[in-house]
Image (cartoon, rainbow, N blue to C red):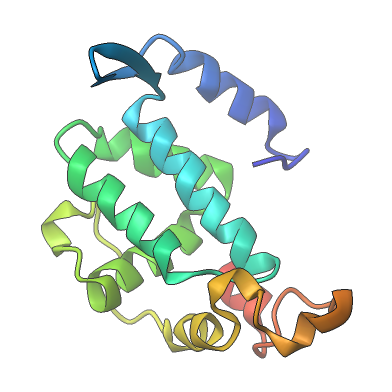
Length: 161
């Protein structure tokens, strides 16, 4: 995330988690990974960036679901929710969690905190099916065209924030 409005908070939380890293061994070579909360913040905010830009691919949702599935026992749910809220993306995260459960098949028990059940996610799923594949096949962007709105979906920015 590169929001100038959240820059100082993001630096602060990054410093707080700098020594809480995970490690993965690949052929006996240790690979340092971000703390689980930071991995989720990075991946999920990156998915949001794609939604606001050219489009989301289903693979991105699968990446998030896989992280939640593998890191669920390492996450501090209260801290993660606070990070999302202070970063200004908690409402987006609720939408994402509902999509991961309802469309991708992530068991609800792997979502770190509850989300409102009455969320309307149909507009986002429609956007994924329409733009899909990161927007590469979306005729709205053929020939380098851009659009000035956040999304072609009505009131998309209101639903996100």
